[in-house]
Length: 361
Image (cartoon, rainbow, N blue to C red; front, side, top):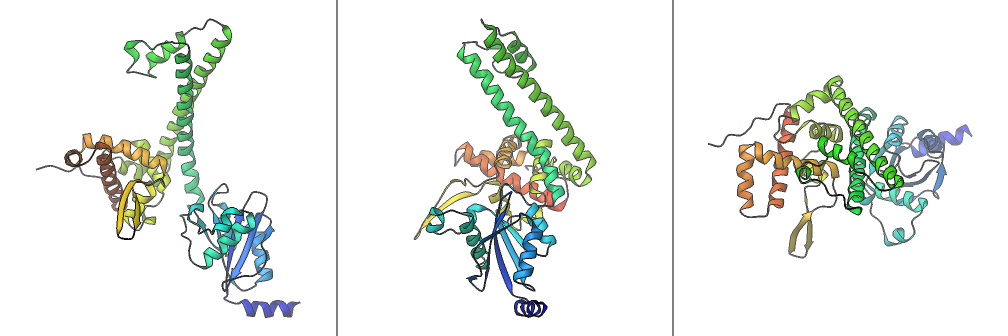
């Protein structure tokens, strides 16, 4: 037995093995490929790097192991664990995996793992950035805040729907000041004819009050994090020197992008945010469409909001916006301004120097 193992180690020494992993909570389905050939039928292993490593060492001892799985529910912990077991691992966007027609119509864990292994060996995959665990934990609090904002918006819409259904009209003096202290006091005074409707309505108001308390608490914790974590706080302060970038936008960029040097070119950063146009080309014809649907939704949304503020604060951007509006509509012009803002943020981040407002001579 020992002799056979030694022979295998010599036979597989330095050989590259490509492992496609379909990751699930209860099991991993794996396919192994080498030299453009599937080595065995797909099989399942316990959902751990240790189990996979033991299988590979037993079947293909002495080899070089390369693994890939799709980004999704399990996050990045499998990749980090696989690295510790000397399995070179990448994570890919599911939308970027080359898929044959048969694989689309017959989607199983085995098919997915085999497809991943084949594409990995053919070098057809582009890896996404794998953050350190600590960096992931930093952004968890900010993402929770974003979730609270969305939840609060739903609660507000439900309150407005109830008011509209029973024809309760907002006083004229409060029309332009929705959700202010005075508006919330007016909401408390709304009365219904039956206690049942009143209970349902009051429950919504209580949900809103609780949501606002949670948001305020999370904001305090975010500011505390920026104070207690020097690497975050210093960068947040720097980014706030860029016109239109406030605390929430700055910390969003810091915890989501993590490392600006991961983007080798400016175009890569613009594309990641979602400010690149969609392109359609056939033969000699080529035209650009609207913004690509592939985006980091919150970064793009926040950046466009910042661009509207920046054109009012920075004289150079104000002038540029006016020039752009002469040859395109305002929405297209503000997208150009947003790209300029990204360039400023990138420069401030990489040079670690505050932004200096431009002067028009």
